[in-house]
Image (cartoon, rainbow, N blue to C red; front, side, top):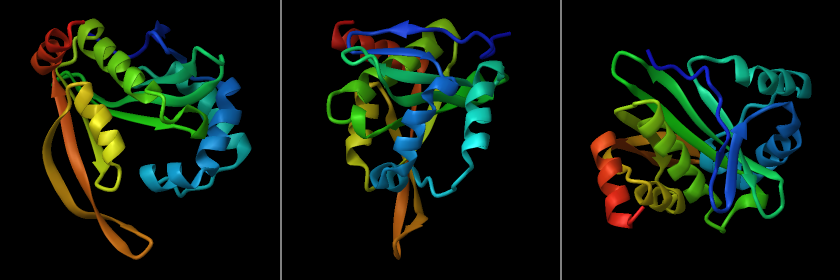
Length: 188
């Protein structure tokens, strides 16, 4: 049975995805302190440095999730994380989430990282479905997900109250046959 015990290193044109570890703490601290990251991911919980470092140290030991650091090949610095979690082995499905800190935005790194981890999940792990939720005020992320083959399935109305305003969450997924079709149409 497929699980997430193996933590690969994947190399793309602009990014390397490698297992997340304690060395990524400075990037995570900077990302979590960034107001845009907090808004786009609804990350409001503050945790101590000790707990954050412990969480990072244990990512490699989790058989039900895959936490990979996104490393910018140009600088060698980690700029975010790409995660497959909420694994359902009976249905060959999981959730996807990504976080890009201020040092990794607007250069296509998140789009490439998304394609890489989705490809790994479908082609190497044999997943059939990968899903996600994206807040309606994040059209940049929605476009990146669509480039990786994700399709809008629906909308969770008023799921988030942000600064006094209600925000919808858009539910998206990619199925293995759609991923393969997206690859063919992009010429990969």
